[in-house]
Image (cartoon, rainbow, N blue to C red; front, side):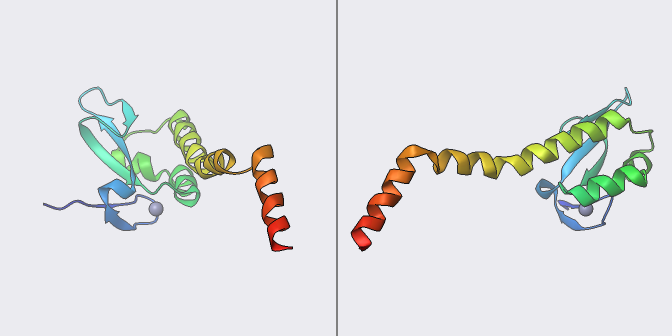
Length: 111
Ligand SMILES: [Zn+2]
């Protein structure tokens, strides 16, 4: 079994799970993300690869179909969401008035 996949943009090879999957559904020819049966293309969840895939029509060529701008919009949105996640977590874990008090207390102890 070969689980290795290749990014359509940068040609990086890696495990299937490290890429986003874009599928041309059979037989409808509809393009969707992640799931479905049909011809698939893989792309790194990275800004560079998304950009290149769009500019050079890498996905379109890999899937032998014209890829709608909307799909790249969706991928980009997803990418931005992924980028946002760590910030959201940090905002929840730290900050806020309680944290400030704790820091003040610590500084008091050191003195
Ligand atoms: Zn890539």
